Amino acid sequence: MLRRGVIYDLQAKHYGGLSPAHRKTLLQIAESKTASPPASMKAGARLVREWNGIAHVVDIVEGGYRYRDKTYASLTAIAKEITGAHWSGPRFFGIKGKVQ
Image 1 (cartoon, rainbow, N blue to C red):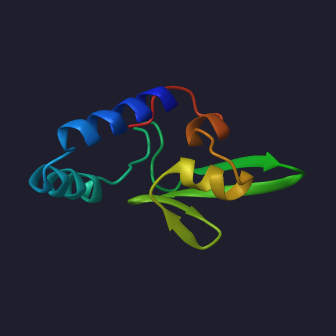
Image 2: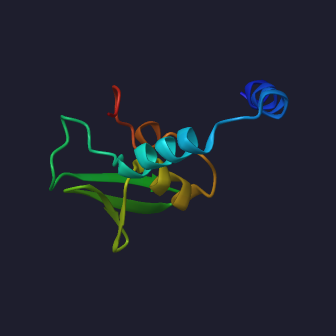
């Protein structure tokens, strides 16, 4: 992964990187995307994960996930909040299959 990033940076420096129009388009796409719970998880479902002796409860809500009175777009963001390290959110919460 690091190698790809370094190679991209070298190519961007050599060829000039993304045009402002392409950069704007990509930012618009990224901002318009919201994570949605997997099809098998409906709003109202609850995930519980014990970490370091503390039970962490996440509620599935319309448009995302609710943890400690804050709504998150992804389980990965919540897993990072809990652990302080990058985790795959679905893996951290023990959800099998691909999250869309």
